[in-house]
Length: 214
Image (cartoon, rainbow, N blue to C red; front, side, top):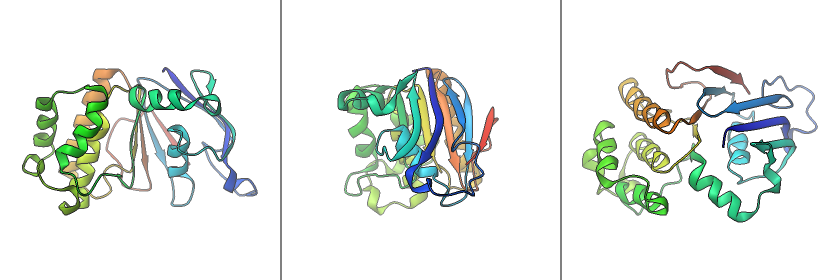
């Protein structure tokens, strides 16, 4: 996938609003593979809704969302599955990890879908993010910041053309934020992927090519 296009896109819940001042909603926006974007938003402006539209979890919007010129609303179930496994990877704001599984199990349950990364590579990421000793710990017993690092690793263990990360460092200090950005960008560059970072304030300190204000 080379392009994600938003054409006059608007969540249906905003349809009656007349006070929108957005660089995304009701605009023409093109997100291209290989580029780095930041979506800045205030709470309640539809940031997580946009993420849900892109990965096909929700379709309650007006306007058009297109993948390489094809309407998202025209995709079938198998096509959405393929898109999520091989073209768009998403790190959820609320993480959506399995609390009863260990940190490594949470990553491997996704990695086994494609067999994209070796266990050695995964463990190197755990070490780089300072949670090597947590691989066998149940995620439910870990801090939210530690869980964010697990969720990032999970997002990276698949092929993708676009990586969508929703408030990835909200509970991390500066050093851990830098480490997270390092592994994220290294893998994105390796895959030639586009990266879309969202934030309602604190965000990764990266050289964004385009900043959109939601």
